[in-house]
Structure formats: C-alpha cells, structure tokens
Amino acid sequence: MSRSSPSVTGSRSVTVDSDDGVRMAGLVVPAAPEAGPRPPTFVVVHGFTGSITRPSFRRLAGWLCRFGEVRGHDARGHGRSGGRSTVGGDPEVRDVNAAVAAARADGARAVATLGMSLGGGVVLRQQKDPAAPHRGRSPSSSSLASSGRASRRGRRRDLHRGRWYIRDTPPMRRVHWLLEAPLGRRVVAPLFRLRLDDPWVVPPESPLAVVGRITPTPLLLVHGDRDTYFPLEHLRALVRAAGPTTTAWVVPGFGHAESGATAPLVERIGRWVSATIGP
Image 1 (cartoon, helix red, strand yellow):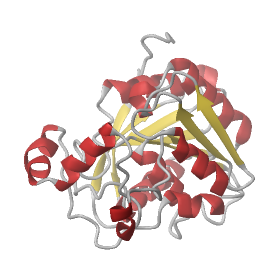
Image 2 (cartoon, rainbow, N blue to C red):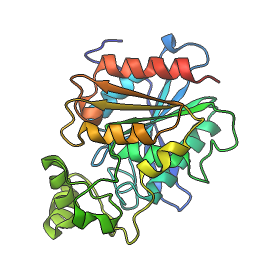
Image 3 (tube, rainbow, N blue to C red):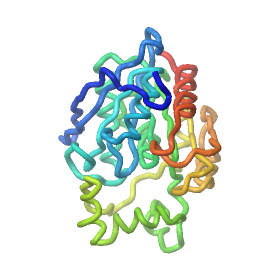
C-alpha cells in the first residue's frame, strides 16, 4: 500500500442508527492482509465540519487499515447523516456508542475509538458514558484523542457557559462565529453540509472532567506542535488530569486533526493499538 496514495479498496457503505432514531451514513474499510488474522477494529470519529467522504478521512483510513478494520460515520448533522449537530454534545456520544455496538455486532473483538479534534472530545466522554457498549468487558478497548481540547479554560466571560467555549486562537474564533452568528449558522454552515441544532442550554461534562476516570482503559493522547486551533496547553491539562493508563505524544510538525495527519503518524498509532489491546 503506497504511503502517498493509500487504498480503500473493498470499502463498503453502511448505515448506523443511534438509539434516538438518527440514521448515520457509515463506511467500513476492511483490514489489509498485513494486519494479521485477528486485528483490532478502529472506530474513527471525524472533526467538526468533517465527513467520511473527505479525502483527508479516506487517506487516514487507507493508512490505518494496515493495522485493522476501519469504521467511520458522518456525525449527526454532517454530510449524508440525519439529525442536527450539537457540536460534540451528548447526542454525539450516543452516536459513537451506536458505531461501537455495530462493530461488535459485526464480530469485532478489540475496538479502539479514534477521535479527531471535536471527535477526540467525544470519544473521551464516550468512554465513561453509562450506555457505552464496552462497559462490563475486560479492557479490550482503547481510546485515542488527536488534536483535542481540554475544554475548561476560557475567557472570564465564558466561565458561566461551562468553559467549553475556547477562543484562544483565530481558527477557534472563526468556529465560534460560525456557531453563534446568524450569518454563520444560516448561510456558512450549509456550505459545509452542516446542520446545526440549537445551542446547549446546559453544557455537558467536559473531556477534562472525565479523562481521569477512563483508567483502566488504555488511552493515547496525540497533539501536534503546529496545531493552530488548540495550543499545547490543552494537551498538558488533559495529561495532568489523566489516569495512569494514559500515554501522551507531542508530535513535531503535526498540525490539526485528520487534515494534518501523515502516514508515519497514523502508522505509529496503529502500532500502538496493536501492541496495547488484543482480542
């Protein structure tokens, strides 16, 4: 498989239904022969405005399938999926539960959830969700968050909003304009095939609040030193709050989420999962 042009040959489209009736468009990329006889399954959750149809997602899946089956879905309110995006709220956690349950139903023995940016916060919170399909199992699952936010630091005027509303960088200020300004919500969001739900009334529990409770599930936190959305301070905060089964990488030259991922980084993640969890 070429590093510059990874293949997703044999991929198939699927649908996944969340427990509140939202139907999501999904993609399954089979494990490549070199993945071995009993490889793990990766459930990948894209970032905000992302999609399984994007070239960046397809590249990542093509590199990652060397280590196991790759499953992804358009998050609710994105692309071909139904519903409306709550931008990483509790409904997105339910969607990841549904994707993991679908992987288990198809025979997956070891499952790793890999979240990118906003998806990273979702998979961290999903690990401690009472309805998560992995609860009650031996630790045959892992969680990986790439380019994620700690979601507890913010300007003083944002503290009453649960400290989710991070505006540290110009890209994040543009994201919040899209979410909060009428022009952003009504005109710009549809250009990304994005359908937004009403803003949160009560912010959900943040990734920083739950990361310390993920132990004993193995957790990998990955952050680039060229991430223009979230400074390294967000990774440091998560690491300080995380439990003893957490591994953290600061990756030189890595930017943000799936668009910044490279073949060597994805392969390193694949090797970590293969060495950390098993059927």
